[in-house]
Image 1: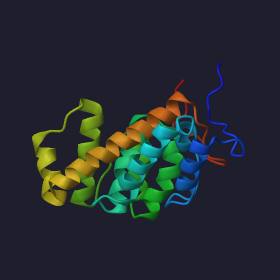
Image 2 (image 1 turned 120 degrees about the horizontal axis):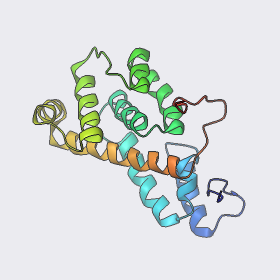
Image 3 (image 1 turned 135 degrees about the horizontal axis):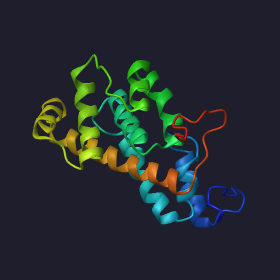
Length: 186
């Protein structure tokens, strides 16, 4: 099998890679790991994508709990182990129930205690599964978060699809100590 570009030597970065590496490491993430390391193979892509990612993760009008919910739906859809291992604990810390997180991981429809959680889940699930969002679901999301919120939610879903595709294409290993949330089915 061909070597996948995740084992980046931080002491041998090109000047362009170093600029992007430093921007990521000094930003809100504080660490350059997983798909971000893969992207450094193309510094221009890494620079652009990480800036979009910083907005999608930290800058939208969605509360962190709901952003993390959208990220988990995406990670589960793509069966992206690294993404799940990183974001499931964050989602729980931000207030998403462990029962909801586990249901999403298992591919089951969760029981939500809040209408906003259900709206975000339905929007994300429909867009991934059906490649469309039903009018009723769109209306629920825009009633809660406005047009700007619906656009930002779609951006989160698209960005984390890119993240998940990168993780899967380049076989990014799980973080140290994590167990595979999506073991291969026999």
